[in-house]
Length: 411
Picture 1 (cartoon, rainbow, N blue to C red):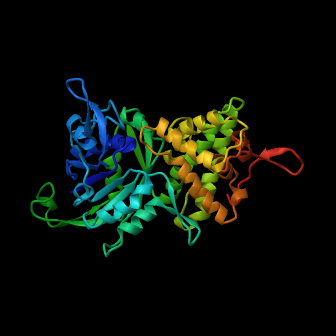
Picture 2: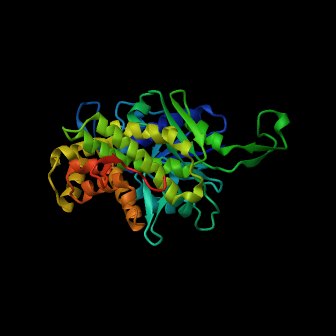
Picture 3: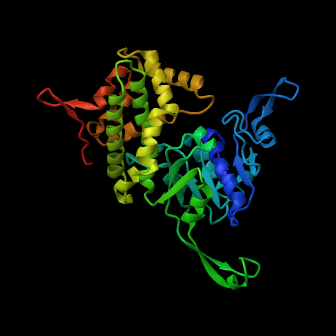
């Protein structure tokens, strides 16, 4: 029997809980109740008498079956139980769904790794990357999770990812969309004895469980169509770098003299840089070209560059700065923080953090010229370059003085 726990309860965590809760109630191999770990905070709510009062968010979610702060107006399944104690939420879990800002993840993993079931596996919905400063290389968040969760004599912990063109509010409203589960969970054999299984013919047999398919079924629904691939690196890099490209798309949207043609060119170059980055830094992980045609690749890139928090904040960043104004590094950092507070209602920008991480990696390898778009998004975001210099990340000036499309090396 699967015990599924959702680690995180923001906008996306609450949205995905709808599919997970519904499926765990329906699937015979899942425990019905689904704990959802909540970072406890006090919020203002309107009581029955019309007066405002301070309440703990976990209590409000469990009473109203609604995350009134991060996903207001959407009813959550009644078997989703908000729990502020991490260890209690994850006790005996066989499947952990990670959906929270990744900078908060490492200390949480150390707390929960000794309370989950020995066979526990994970799926990360977190879009970002880590950076190994010693070896100067990017580290997938799924790899970081596997490393920490496998410490302390626990044995190997396997973590896949779920990435796709999934705007949380649209998913929560039941609009049709696709997503990609990338995982390589091993097939396991389970002995079936008396009282287990459906019918006497199952007794004493060894059942082989396809954990990849089981996991896909826990997410999949008529309106949320999940496909499975094995290319974890390609899917996860796409999920991280598409947020960086979305910053560039937001800059284009915020400039009155640039339009749809420029944005289309930016998406094309962005997709090529995503593929190139995956192949260069994860060449030992069987990155496949067709992964980037799945929902986790091209589809997610398009959706994020036309909607989502990163595009929205970058658009506002461009409008507040103006097209050709130069800003100090301190001013850039301050403006991002201001916009995050003003526009995101407690959510976190992932694109700016991913941009810093990606830039660190390509700079450390001397590859800035091979990734002109990532380089230029970074220069605008953190070094104060004029916003209209975003076009320098899309086209380069050839020696003859004519412009030509960017050619990504080692693609």
